[in-house]
Length: 537
Image 1 (cartoon, rainbow, N blue to C red):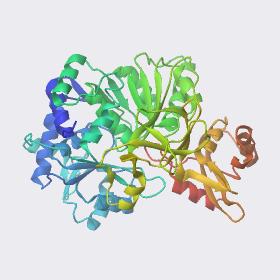
Image 2 (cartoon, rainbow, N blue to C red; image 1 turned 180 degrees about the horizontal axis):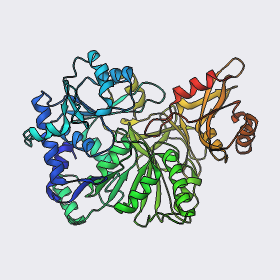
Image 3 (tube, helix red, strand yellow; image 1 turned 45 degrees about the vertical axis):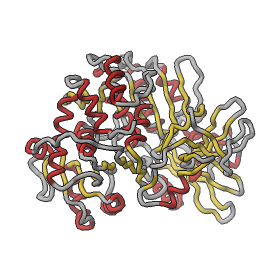
Image 4 (tube, rainbow, N blue to C red; image 1 turned 180 degrees about the vertical axis):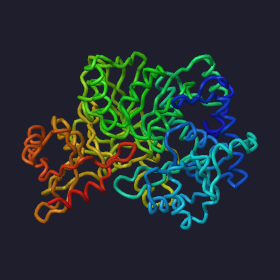
Protein backbone atom coordinates (compact mmCIF):
# COMPACT_ATOMS: atom_id res chain seq x y z
CA UNK A 1 0.00 0.00 0.00
CA UNK A 2 1.60 3.27 -1.11
CA UNK A 3 -0.05 5.49 1.47
CA UNK A 4 1.49 7.56 4.24
CA UNK A 5 1.59 5.54 7.43
CA UNK A 6 -0.04 8.51 9.17
CA UNK A 7 -3.03 8.17 6.84
CA UNK A 8 -3.14 4.43 7.57
CA UNK A 9 -3.18 5.11 11.33
CA UNK A 10 -5.87 7.79 10.91
CA UNK A 11 -7.99 5.27 9.01
CA UNK A 12 -7.67 2.74 11.84
CA UNK A 13 -8.54 5.42 14.39
CA UNK A 14 -11.66 6.38 12.48
CA UNK A 15 -12.83 2.74 12.52
CA UNK A 16 -11.96 2.16 16.20
CA UNK A 17 -12.26 5.61 17.88
CA UNK A 18 -13.41 4.42 21.30
CA UNK A 19 -11.25 1.29 21.57
CA UNK A 20 -8.03 1.46 23.57
CA UNK A 21 -4.97 1.74 21.32
CA UNK A 22 -2.26 1.68 24.00
CA UNK A 23 -1.82 0.97 27.72
CA UNK A 24 1.15 1.90 29.91
CA UNK A 25 0.60 0.88 33.50
CA UNK A 26 -2.54 2.71 34.66
CA UNK A 27 -2.41 5.16 31.74
CA UNK A 28 -4.29 4.51 28.51
CA UNK A 29 -5.25 6.19 25.24
CA UNK A 30 -8.21 5.44 23.03
CA UNK A 31 -7.67 5.80 19.31
CA UNK A 32 -9.55 9.11 19.35
CA UNK A 33 -7.36 10.42 22.17
CA UNK A 34 -4.19 9.17 20.52
CA UNK A 35 -5.10 10.85 17.25
CA UNK A 36 -6.03 14.18 18.82
CA UNK A 37 -2.91 14.40 21.00
CA UNK A 38 -0.66 13.45 18.08
CA UNK A 39 -2.37 16.13 15.96
CA UNK A 40 -1.79 18.73 18.69
CA UNK A 41 1.87 17.80 19.04
CA UNK A 42 2.12 18.01 15.25
CA UNK A 43 0.57 21.48 15.46
CA UNK A 44 3.22 22.55 17.97
CA UNK A 45 6.07 21.19 15.85
CA UNK A 46 4.65 22.82 12.71
CA UNK A 47 4.62 26.18 14.51
CA UNK A 48 8.36 25.67 15.13
CA UNK A 49 8.99 25.22 11.43
CA UNK A 50 8.90 21.44 11.21
CA UNK A 51 7.38 20.37 7.92
CA UNK A 52 7.53 17.76 5.15
CA UNK A 53 10.89 16.04 4.93
CA UNK A 54 12.25 17.46 8.20
CA UNK A 55 14.10 14.94 10.38
CA UNK A 56 12.72 14.68 13.92
CA UNK A 57 14.57 12.55 16.49
CA UNK A 58 12.83 10.68 19.32
CA UNK A 59 14.94 9.97 22.43
CA UNK A 60 12.37 8.44 24.78
CA UNK A 61 11.79 5.34 26.87
CA UNK A 62 8.86 3.07 26.02
CA UNK A 63 5.53 4.68 26.70
CA UNK A 64 2.53 6.43 25.24
CA UNK A 65 4.51 9.58 24.44
CA UNK A 66 6.83 7.63 22.15
CA UNK A 67 3.90 6.42 20.05
CA UNK A 68 2.22 9.84 20.08
CA UNK A 69 5.45 11.52 18.99
CA UNK A 70 6.08 9.21 16.04
CA UNK A 71 2.44 9.56 14.96
CA UNK A 72 2.69 13.38 15.17
CA UNK A 73 5.86 13.44 13.08
CA UNK A 74 4.27 11.23 10.44
CA UNK A 75 1.21 13.50 10.30
CA UNK A 76 3.50 16.38 9.24
CA UNK A 77 5.13 14.26 6.50
CA UNK A 78 8.32 14.69 8.49
CA UNK A 79 10.74 11.80 9.11
CA UNK A 80 11.02 10.27 12.61
CA UNK A 81 14.31 8.70 13.66
CA UNK A 82 15.23 6.66 16.72
CA UNK A 83 17.84 7.69 19.28
CA UNK A 84 19.40 5.37 21.84
CA UNK A 85 18.69 6.86 25.27
CA UNK A 86 22.06 5.56 26.51
CA UNK A 87 24.03 7.74 24.13
CA UNK A 88 26.50 10.27 25.49
CA UNK A 89 27.81 13.50 24.01
CA UNK A 90 29.89 12.22 21.08
CA UNK A 91 27.31 9.60 20.10
CA UNK A 92 24.43 12.09 20.20
CA UNK A 93 26.35 14.61 18.10
CA UNK A 94 27.33 11.96 15.57
CA UNK A 95 23.84 10.49 15.18
CA UNK A 96 21.85 13.73 15.14
CA UNK A 97 24.39 15.31 12.81
CA UNK A 98 24.38 12.33 10.45
CA UNK A 99 20.57 12.39 10.36
CA UNK A 100 20.44 16.19 9.95
CA UNK A 101 17.84 16.30 12.73
CA UNK A 102 15.96 19.59 13.02
CA UNK A 103 13.85 18.68 16.05
CA UNK A 104 14.07 16.36 19.04
CA UNK A 105 11.57 14.91 21.50
CA UNK A 106 13.56 13.87 24.57
CA UNK A 107 13.04 12.38 28.00
CA UNK A 108 13.76 14.73 30.89
CA UNK A 109 16.52 12.42 32.15
CA UNK A 110 18.49 13.18 28.98
CA UNK A 111 18.27 16.97 29.25
CA UNK A 112 21.81 17.50 30.54
CA UNK A 113 23.31 15.38 27.76
CA UNK A 114 21.27 17.18 25.10
CA UNK A 115 22.24 20.57 26.57
CA UNK A 116 25.90 19.58 26.23
CA UNK A 117 25.41 18.45 22.62
CA UNK A 118 23.34 21.42 21.39
CA UNK A 119 26.26 23.77 20.54
CA UNK A 120 27.52 21.19 18.03
CA UNK A 121 24.05 20.85 16.47
CA UNK A 122 23.03 24.32 15.23
CA UNK A 123 20.35 22.87 12.96
CA UNK A 124 18.47 21.50 16.02
CA UNK A 125 15.87 24.22 16.56
CA UNK A 126 12.74 22.60 18.03
CA UNK A 127 12.99 20.53 21.23
CA UNK A 128 10.23 19.06 23.37
CA UNK A 129 10.83 17.51 26.80
CA UNK A 130 8.74 14.65 28.16
CA UNK A 131 8.50 14.54 31.96
CA UNK A 132 9.68 16.93 34.71
CA UNK A 133 7.11 19.61 33.76
CA UNK A 134 8.40 21.94 36.48
CA UNK A 135 12.00 21.70 35.28
CA UNK A 136 11.88 22.33 31.52
CA UNK A 137 15.05 23.98 30.11
CA UNK A 138 14.68 27.37 28.44
CA UNK A 139 15.70 25.81 25.12
CA UNK A 140 12.82 23.27 25.15
CA UNK A 141 9.05 23.15 25.45
CA UNK A 142 7.26 20.94 27.97
CA UNK A 143 5.46 18.08 26.24
CA UNK A 144 2.11 18.36 28.02
CA UNK A 145 2.11 22.15 27.83
CA UNK A 146 2.83 21.98 24.09
CA UNK A 147 0.05 19.46 23.47
CA UNK A 148 -2.45 21.46 25.51
CA UNK A 149 -1.67 24.81 23.91
CA UNK A 150 -1.37 23.88 20.23
CA UNK A 151 -4.14 23.72 17.68
CA UNK A 152 -4.39 20.27 16.08
CA UNK A 153 -2.63 20.03 12.74
CA UNK A 154 -5.26 19.43 10.05
CA UNK A 155 -5.29 16.19 8.12
CA UNK A 156 -3.80 16.53 4.67
CA UNK A 157 -3.03 14.65 1.49
CA UNK A 158 0.21 12.71 1.84
CA UNK A 159 2.35 10.36 -0.19
CA UNK A 160 4.74 7.44 0.18
CA UNK A 161 6.96 9.35 2.59
CA UNK A 162 10.36 8.45 4.04
CA UNK A 163 11.02 6.32 7.12
CA UNK A 164 14.41 6.31 8.88
CA UNK A 165 15.51 3.58 11.32
CA UNK A 166 19.01 3.58 12.76
CA UNK A 167 20.65 0.22 13.38
CA UNK A 168 22.21 -0.69 16.71
CA UNK A 169 25.81 -0.26 15.65
CA UNK A 170 27.26 -3.14 17.71
CA UNK A 171 30.37 -3.47 15.53
CA UNK A 172 30.65 0.08 14.21
CA UNK A 173 28.82 3.38 14.07
CA UNK A 174 25.03 3.16 13.67
CA UNK A 175 23.72 3.33 10.11
CA UNK A 176 20.41 4.94 9.19
CA UNK A 177 18.25 2.69 7.00
CA UNK A 178 16.18 5.05 4.85
CA UNK A 179 13.08 3.54 3.27
CA UNK A 180 9.51 4.42 2.33
CA UNK A 181 6.21 4.04 4.16
CA UNK A 182 5.13 1.37 1.68
CA UNK A 183 8.02 -0.82 2.86
CA UNK A 184 7.24 -0.02 6.48
CA UNK A 185 3.61 -1.05 5.93
CA UNK A 186 4.57 -4.44 4.47
CA UNK A 187 7.04 -5.13 7.29
CA UNK A 188 4.50 -4.26 9.97
CA UNK A 189 1.71 -6.28 8.35
CA UNK A 190 3.92 -9.35 8.85
CA UNK A 191 3.75 -8.63 12.60
CA UNK A 192 -0.02 -8.30 12.61
CA UNK A 193 -2.19 -9.63 9.83
CA UNK A 194 0.18 -12.49 9.03
CA UNK A 195 0.04 -13.75 12.63
CA UNK A 196 -3.77 -13.71 12.43
CA UNK A 197 -3.80 -15.55 9.10
CA UNK A 198 -5.23 -12.51 7.31
CA UNK A 199 -4.21 -11.20 3.86
CA UNK A 200 -2.48 -7.82 3.78
CA UNK A 201 -5.00 -5.09 2.87
CA UNK A 202 -3.89 -3.34 -0.32
CA UNK A 203 -6.02 -0.19 -0.08
CA UNK A 204 -7.49 1.94 2.70
CA UNK A 205 -10.89 0.54 1.79
CA UNK A 206 -9.57 -3.00 2.18
CA UNK A 207 -8.12 -2.02 5.55
CA UNK A 208 -11.46 -0.70 6.81
CA UNK A 209 -13.23 -3.84 5.60
CA UNK A 210 -10.75 -6.21 7.29
CA UNK A 211 -10.88 -4.28 10.58
CA UNK A 212 -14.68 -4.33 10.57
CA UNK A 213 -14.69 -8.06 9.86
CA UNK A 214 -12.20 -8.68 12.70
CA UNK A 215 -14.54 -6.71 14.97
CA UNK A 216 -14.50 -3.06 16.00
CA UNK A 217 -15.79 -3.94 19.48
CA UNK A 218 -12.86 -6.23 20.35
CA UNK A 219 -9.08 -6.41 20.15
CA UNK A 220 -7.86 -8.77 17.48
CA UNK A 221 -4.53 -8.88 19.33
CA UNK A 222 -3.12 -7.65 22.66
CA UNK A 223 0.60 -7.22 22.09
CA UNK A 224 3.35 -6.51 24.62
CA UNK A 225 6.58 -5.39 22.92
CA UNK A 226 9.28 -5.89 25.56
CA UNK A 227 12.24 -4.40 23.63
CA UNK A 228 12.74 -0.64 23.49
CA UNK A 229 10.78 1.20 20.81
CA UNK A 230 14.06 2.68 19.62
CA UNK A 231 14.78 -0.86 18.37
CA UNK A 232 13.09 -2.00 15.14
CA UNK A 233 11.58 -5.05 16.85
CA UNK A 234 9.72 -2.95 19.41
CA UNK A 235 8.51 -0.38 16.89
CA UNK A 236 7.46 -2.82 14.19
CA UNK A 237 5.59 -5.18 16.51
CA UNK A 238 3.79 -2.13 17.94
CA UNK A 239 2.69 -1.01 14.48
CA UNK A 240 1.83 -4.59 13.46
CA UNK A 241 -0.60 -5.02 16.36
CA UNK A 242 -2.22 -1.62 15.77
CA UNK A 243 -2.63 -2.29 12.04
CA UNK A 244 -4.51 -5.50 12.76
CA UNK A 245 -7.00 -3.88 15.13
CA UNK A 246 -5.10 -4.72 18.29
CA UNK A 247 -4.00 -2.99 21.48
CA UNK A 248 -0.41 -2.39 22.57
CA UNK A 249 0.77 -2.74 26.18
CA UNK A 250 4.08 -1.29 27.38
CA UNK A 251 6.05 -2.16 30.50
CA UNK A 252 6.60 0.68 32.96
CA UNK A 253 10.11 -0.19 34.16
CA UNK A 254 12.96 1.51 32.35
CA UNK A 255 15.06 -1.62 32.52
CA UNK A 256 13.85 -5.09 31.64
CA UNK A 257 12.03 -6.83 34.50
CA UNK A 258 10.88 -10.36 33.58
CA UNK A 259 8.54 -10.56 36.58
CA UNK A 260 6.85 -7.35 35.46
CA UNK A 261 6.45 -8.84 31.99
CA UNK A 262 4.81 -11.99 33.34
CA UNK A 263 2.56 -10.02 35.70
CA UNK A 264 1.53 -7.69 32.87
CA UNK A 265 0.65 -10.62 30.61
CA UNK A 266 -1.54 -11.93 33.42
CA UNK A 267 -3.19 -8.59 34.24
CA UNK A 268 -3.75 -7.29 30.69
CA UNK A 269 -4.61 -10.68 29.17
CA UNK A 270 -1.82 -10.32 26.64
CA UNK A 271 -1.74 -12.87 23.79
CA UNK A 272 1.42 -11.76 21.95
CA UNK A 273 4.83 -10.85 23.39
CA UNK A 274 7.87 -9.75 21.39
CA UNK A 275 11.37 -10.22 22.78
CA UNK A 276 14.97 -10.27 21.58
CA UNK A 277 16.33 -13.78 21.97
CA UNK A 278 17.91 -15.29 25.05
CA UNK A 279 18.73 -11.89 26.51
CA UNK A 280 15.02 -11.49 27.27
CA UNK A 281 13.88 -15.13 27.23
CA UNK A 282 16.36 -16.66 29.67
CA UNK A 283 15.57 -14.22 32.55
CA UNK A 284 11.87 -14.72 31.81
CA UNK A 285 12.25 -18.50 32.07
CA UNK A 286 14.12 -18.05 35.36
CA UNK A 287 11.33 -15.82 36.73
CA UNK A 288 8.59 -18.24 35.66
CA UNK A 289 10.44 -21.21 37.17
CA UNK A 290 10.99 -19.33 40.45
CA UNK A 291 7.34 -18.25 40.69
CA UNK A 292 6.13 -21.80 40.05
CA UNK A 293 8.57 -23.24 42.59
CA UNK A 294 7.30 -20.74 45.18
CA UNK A 295 3.70 -21.87 44.59
CA UNK A 296 2.59 -18.64 42.90
CA UNK A 297 2.77 -19.37 39.18
CA UNK A 298 1.78 -16.64 36.75
CA UNK A 299 -1.42 -17.11 34.75
CA UNK A 300 -0.25 -17.13 31.13
CA UNK A 301 -3.36 -18.83 29.77
CA UNK A 302 -4.04 -16.01 27.27
CA UNK A 303 -0.54 -16.10 25.79
CA UNK A 304 -0.64 -17.46 22.24
CA UNK A 305 2.75 -16.49 20.82
CA UNK A 306 6.15 -15.16 21.78
CA UNK A 307 8.07 -13.62 18.89
CA UNK A 308 11.84 -13.14 18.92
CA UNK A 309 13.91 -11.21 16.40
CA UNK A 310 17.55 -10.26 16.23
CA UNK A 311 19.45 -12.45 18.72
CA UNK A 312 19.84 -16.22 19.07
CA UNK A 313 17.04 -17.93 20.98
CA UNK A 314 18.30 -21.23 22.43
CA UNK A 315 16.37 -24.48 22.22
CA UNK A 316 16.54 -25.19 25.94
CA UNK A 317 15.12 -21.75 26.80
CA UNK A 318 12.19 -22.26 24.42
CA UNK A 319 11.40 -25.58 26.08
CA UNK A 320 11.51 -23.98 29.53
CA UNK A 321 9.03 -21.29 28.44
CA UNK A 322 6.73 -23.85 26.84
CA UNK A 323 6.37 -25.60 30.19
CA UNK A 324 4.57 -22.48 31.46
CA UNK A 325 2.36 -21.59 28.48
CA UNK A 326 0.67 -23.41 25.60
CA UNK A 327 1.93 -21.10 22.88
CA UNK A 328 4.07 -20.80 19.76
CA UNK A 329 7.70 -19.72 20.02
CA UNK A 330 8.19 -17.84 16.74
CA UNK A 331 11.88 -17.25 16.08
CA UNK A 332 12.63 -14.86 13.20
CA UNK A 333 15.82 -13.88 11.42
CA UNK A 334 15.32 -10.30 10.25
CA UNK A 335 17.18 -7.00 10.19
CA UNK A 336 16.57 -3.29 9.97
CA UNK A 337 17.66 -3.61 6.33
CA UNK A 338 14.99 -6.14 5.39
CA UNK A 339 13.55 -9.58 5.85
CA UNK A 340 12.29 -11.75 7.42
CA UNK A 341 14.87 -14.10 6.00
CA UNK A 342 14.04 -17.25 7.96
CA UNK A 343 11.58 -18.47 10.59
CA UNK A 344 11.26 -21.29 13.10
CA UNK A 345 8.13 -22.12 15.09
CA UNK A 346 8.20 -24.40 18.13
CA UNK A 347 5.18 -25.69 20.06
CA UNK A 348 4.67 -27.90 23.07
CA UNK A 349 5.66 -31.47 22.40
CA UNK A 350 7.85 -30.55 19.43
CA UNK A 351 11.65 -30.76 19.40
CA UNK A 352 13.36 -27.39 19.65
CA UNK A 353 16.60 -26.50 17.90
CA UNK A 354 19.01 -23.61 18.16
CA UNK A 355 19.76 -21.57 14.99
CA UNK A 356 17.82 -23.94 12.70
CA UNK A 357 15.15 -22.31 10.52
CA UNK A 358 13.13 -22.50 7.33
CA UNK A 359 13.51 -19.87 4.64
CA UNK A 360 10.78 -17.24 4.77
CA UNK A 361 8.76 -17.12 1.53
CA UNK A 362 10.75 -15.15 -1.04
CA UNK A 363 14.08 -15.31 0.85
CA UNK A 364 17.23 -17.08 -0.41
CA UNK A 365 20.69 -18.25 0.60
CA UNK A 366 23.17 -17.04 -2.03
CA UNK A 367 26.86 -17.62 -2.66
CA UNK A 368 29.48 -15.01 -3.52
CA UNK A 369 28.44 -15.33 -7.16
CA UNK A 370 24.85 -14.36 -6.35
CA UNK A 371 23.52 -17.82 -7.21
CA UNK A 372 21.43 -19.91 -4.83
CA UNK A 373 23.35 -22.25 -2.54
CA UNK A 374 22.60 -25.89 -3.35
CA UNK A 375 20.87 -27.66 -0.43
CA UNK A 376 23.10 -30.29 1.13
CA UNK A 377 26.27 -28.99 -0.52
CA UNK A 378 27.78 -27.77 2.73
CA UNK A 379 28.44 -24.36 1.17
CA UNK A 380 28.01 -21.41 3.54
CA UNK A 381 26.23 -18.52 1.87
CA UNK A 382 24.42 -15.32 2.77
CA UNK A 383 20.77 -14.81 3.62
CA UNK A 384 18.99 -12.50 1.19
CA UNK A 385 15.48 -11.04 1.05
CA UNK A 386 13.80 -8.94 -1.66
CA UNK A 387 13.49 -5.18 -1.07
CA UNK A 388 12.17 -2.28 -3.11
CA UNK A 389 14.25 0.22 -5.06
CA UNK A 390 13.95 2.97 -2.43
CA UNK A 391 15.75 1.49 0.56
CA UNK A 392 19.31 2.61 1.26
CA UNK A 393 21.67 3.73 4.00
CA UNK A 394 21.49 7.38 4.95
CA UNK A 395 24.50 9.17 3.46
CA UNK A 396 26.55 6.02 2.74
CA UNK A 397 26.55 4.98 -0.92
CA UNK A 398 29.37 2.46 -0.43
CA UNK A 399 27.57 0.57 2.35
CA UNK A 400 24.32 0.78 0.35
CA UNK A 401 25.93 -0.90 -2.65
CA UNK A 402 27.47 -3.61 -0.46
CA UNK A 403 24.24 -4.52 1.39
CA UNK A 404 21.49 -3.82 -1.15
CA UNK A 405 22.57 -5.90 -4.14
CA UNK A 406 21.01 -6.42 -7.54
CA UNK A 407 20.80 -10.15 -8.25
CA UNK A 408 19.09 -11.42 -11.38
CA UNK A 409 17.68 -7.99 -12.10
CA UNK A 410 16.05 -7.63 -8.67
CA UNK A 411 17.18 -5.77 -5.53
CA UNK A 412 17.96 -7.80 -2.40
CA UNK A 413 19.00 -7.00 1.17
CA UNK A 414 22.13 -9.02 2.01
CA UNK A 415 23.28 -7.71 5.41
CA UNK A 416 25.86 -10.43 6.05
CA UNK A 417 24.07 -13.26 7.88
CA UNK A 418 25.91 -16.50 7.11
CA UNK A 419 23.89 -19.68 6.62
CA UNK A 420 23.87 -23.04 4.90
CA UNK A 421 21.04 -25.19 3.56
CA UNK A 422 20.81 -28.85 4.51
CA UNK A 423 19.46 -31.43 2.10
CA UNK A 424 15.96 -31.15 3.59
CA UNK A 425 15.92 -27.35 3.23
CA UNK A 426 16.75 -26.49 6.85
CA UNK A 427 18.57 -23.18 7.23
CA UNK A 428 21.51 -23.48 9.65
CA UNK A 429 22.41 -19.98 10.81
CA UNK A 430 26.08 -19.28 11.57
CA UNK A 431 25.80 -15.60 12.49
CA UNK A 432 27.07 -12.36 10.97
CA UNK A 433 30.07 -12.50 8.66
CA UNK A 434 31.60 -9.70 10.70
CA UNK A 435 31.77 -12.12 13.65
CA UNK A 436 33.71 -14.88 11.90
CA UNK A 437 37.05 -15.46 13.66
CA UNK A 438 39.87 -16.73 11.45
CA UNK A 439 42.22 -18.63 13.75
CA UNK A 440 45.07 -20.68 12.30
CA UNK A 441 43.34 -20.71 8.91
CA UNK A 442 40.10 -22.11 10.35
CA UNK A 443 36.89 -20.09 10.35
CA UNK A 444 35.04 -20.08 13.65
CA UNK A 445 31.53 -18.65 14.07
CA UNK A 446 31.54 -16.71 17.33
CA UNK A 447 27.82 -17.20 17.98
CA UNK A 448 28.20 -21.00 17.74
CA UNK A 449 30.81 -20.92 20.51
CA UNK A 450 28.61 -18.58 22.58
CA UNK A 451 25.73 -21.04 22.38
CA UNK A 452 27.98 -23.87 23.54
CA UNK A 453 29.17 -21.81 26.51
CA UNK A 454 25.62 -20.88 27.49
CA UNK A 455 24.79 -24.54 28.06
CA UNK A 456 27.30 -24.63 30.94
CA UNK A 457 25.41 -24.39 34.25
CA UNK A 458 27.78 -21.70 35.57
CA UNK A 459 27.38 -19.34 32.61
CA UNK A 460 24.69 -16.65 32.67
CA UNK A 461 25.75 -14.69 29.59
CA UNK A 462 28.56 -14.94 27.07
CA UNK A 463 30.25 -13.08 24.23
CA UNK A 464 33.00 -14.54 22.07
CA UNK A 465 35.44 -12.34 20.15
CA UNK A 466 38.68 -12.68 18.27
CA UNK A 467 41.80 -10.81 19.40
CA UNK A 468 45.11 -10.44 17.49
CA UNK A 469 47.55 -13.32 17.90
CA UNK A 470 51.06 -13.44 16.40
CA UNK A 471 50.93 -17.17 15.76
CA UNK A 472 47.26 -17.87 14.99
CA UNK A 473 46.23 -14.57 13.42
CA UNK A 474 43.33 -14.37 15.85
CA UNK A 475 42.69 -16.20 19.08
CA UNK A 476 39.26 -16.97 20.48
CA UNK A 477 38.46 -15.22 23.76
CA UNK A 478 35.27 -15.83 25.77
CA UNK A 479 33.96 -12.97 27.91
CA UNK A 480 31.37 -14.38 30.33
CA UNK A 481 29.16 -13.42 33.25
CA UNK A 482 28.51 -16.22 35.74
CA UNK A 483 25.51 -17.17 37.80
CA UNK A 484 25.59 -16.06 41.46
CA UNK A 485 28.12 -18.13 43.45
CA UNK A 486 29.39 -19.99 40.38
CA UNK A 487 32.97 -20.29 39.20
CA UNK A 488 34.54 -21.30 35.90
CA UNK A 489 38.14 -21.75 34.79
CA UNK A 490 39.56 -21.48 31.29
CA UNK A 491 40.26 -25.22 31.22
CA UNK A 492 36.69 -25.99 32.26
CA UNK A 493 35.29 -23.69 29.58
CA UNK A 494 37.54 -25.22 26.93
CA UNK A 495 36.55 -28.75 27.93
CA UNK A 496 32.84 -27.88 27.85
CA UNK A 497 33.03 -26.29 24.41
CA UNK A 498 35.26 -29.11 23.15
CA UNK A 499 32.64 -31.69 24.14
CA UNK A 500 30.22 -30.13 21.64
CA UNK A 501 32.42 -28.51 18.98
CA UNK A 502 35.71 -29.15 17.19
CA UNK A 503 38.90 -28.50 19.13
CA UNK A 504 39.88 -25.41 17.13
CA UNK A 505 36.63 -23.71 18.28
CA UNK A 506 37.53 -23.88 21.96
CA UNK A 507 38.32 -20.49 23.54
CA UNK A 508 42.00 -19.96 24.28
CA UNK A 509 41.20 -17.47 27.04
CA UNK A 510 38.35 -16.82 29.45
CA UNK A 511 37.56 -13.42 30.94
CA UNK A 512 34.95 -13.30 33.73
CA UNK A 513 33.09 -10.03 34.29
CA UNK A 514 30.21 -9.07 36.57
CA UNK A 515 27.94 -8.10 33.68
CA UNK A 516 28.21 -8.09 29.91
CA UNK A 517 27.55 -4.83 28.19
CA UNK A 518 24.56 -4.92 25.86
CA UNK A 519 22.27 -2.38 24.28
CA UNK A 520 18.76 -2.03 25.77
CA UNK A 521 17.54 -4.18 22.89
CA UNK A 522 19.89 -6.99 23.94
CA UNK A 523 22.51 -6.66 21.23
CA UNK A 524 26.10 -7.30 22.25
CA UNK A 525 28.50 -4.39 22.58
CA UNK A 526 31.28 -6.11 20.69
CA UNK A 527 33.66 -3.17 20.77
CA UNK A 528 33.54 -3.25 24.55
CA UNK A 529 33.99 -7.04 24.59
CA UNK A 530 37.08 -6.82 22.37
CA UNK A 531 38.55 -4.12 24.60
CA UNK A 532 37.96 -6.27 27.68
CA UNK A 533 39.42 -9.33 25.94
CA UNK A 534 42.53 -7.51 24.75
CA UNK A 535 43.22 -5.85 28.09
CA UNK A 536 42.89 -9.03 30.15
CA UNK A 537 46.09 -10.50 31.62
